[in-house]
Image 1 (cartoon, helix red, strand yellow):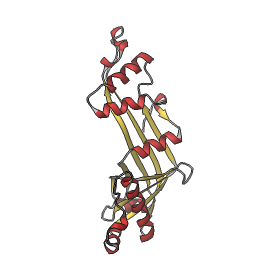
Image 2 (cartoon, one colour; image 1 turned 90 degrees about the vertical axis):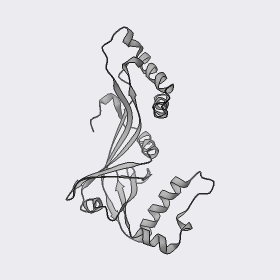
Image 3 (tube, one colour; image 1 turned 180 degrees about the vertical axis):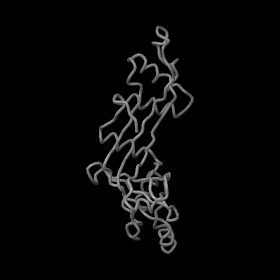
Image 4 (cartoon, rainbow, N blue to C red; image 1 turned 180 degrees about the horizontal axis):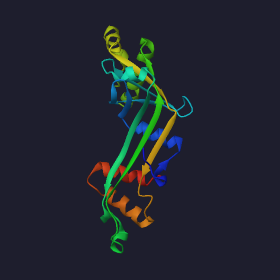
Length: 209
């Protein structure tokens, strides 16, 4: 992705945290079946490999896994908080009206060649770990073992697992870094006071180092 130098994020810990905060990722690839993209929940293992490894699963009916099995490179997109930034947010506009609207956002792109997983035990491990991640914190968390074994086995036959060792990461952290300090604070204040909770999320990120 195009990413201006001032907006690039290279800290691996920050990148992994942003990826984990994105509840739904976009898996994109190009191969025999054309340009394909699938939205799916994923699990990040930051300790596996030099830049981490992503786990997910696709419906067996989704032909994208066939292209992945053939060795095509895949791109996983993790979109974070985003917000429209009006020129009116900049205090400096009172002295210099030469400004235009823009958009602040967080995003991470992860690249790699995926391994397609079809054996039952490994598939069960992936769906169990994904379930445990999203059920944590609930008063009565659901577990894969709560469902009948034969039912789960049937469901596993309808999916394939994906293991994506990350070989390249790109992080974008566009938070008005190219503006003067007073304008950055002006943007943060206006977004924090917005009735839109997504604006509030972006403002919270602007408080972080």
